[in-house]
Image 1 (cartoon, rainbow, N blue to C red):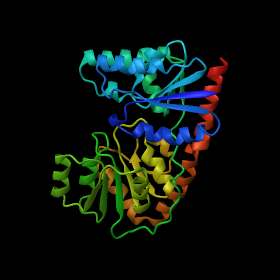
Image 2: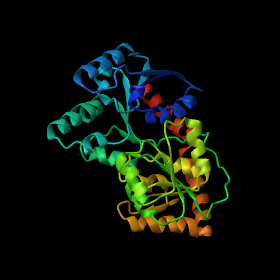
Image 3: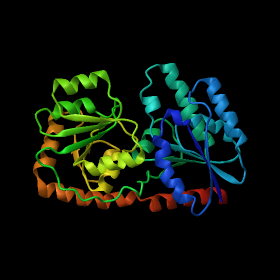
Image 4: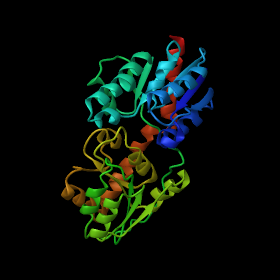
Length: 329
């Protein structure tokens, strides 16, 4: 069996590559794997054409072709061969206000790719339901993201006097602004991973928060951030999955996340859940995590057990089974 993996241009972002690298390393132990990155990082018609020509040249009728996400439109170059498409979320449609652009994205990034693909993998039931709300199909299957096995349980004495709160991501959906306001007057150190905007820097100064900022971290450095923190903060307002939840649980840290899908699905009652747009809800969660030792220990234990659902062995076996069925069909 041979699997060809297709990734977006690396300059667009490394998050999808990072998620799949762990999986591919495991799958490569039992089957032949090839990895390709498309040459263009943009999505204009001529970029789509360039990427599609590149993908077409890599076609192999004996292989399964897996488009790992974002570059859904290259499925047009894979008509007639076995294909799997992973869809992480529908933010490309949900955030599109212009009706013409919205239709364009629906057509070329959702409708046609799903019609062409043999199977479409959704990384959460939330993503699956979101797709079914826009397009009826029986091709969808849910396979979660795998947690990198380098994230291992790491003992740490909880710093009650000034806990380190790790916040991963500074984008519009990561809810950093509400986090800053909710932490006002709570003794802590807010560790932020990601590029800060001027407005976010202004808020940090306004509320006089003790904070530090990490940029362009390696995988090893990111793992260290989890080990060094006391609380993993992930009160997002929109996600396709929520990898920091299971990375935090696997490391043995209490996780605070949003009481919405897919975070509820991923965390599985092993986190402190908040109403993400309610500053008081966030504030009470931080105080609960800091002050209630017995509760915190219970949640950490539950979290570590929950993280085992996302082991690379478990997830890779689900993908291998999917590939085998496609080749046998």
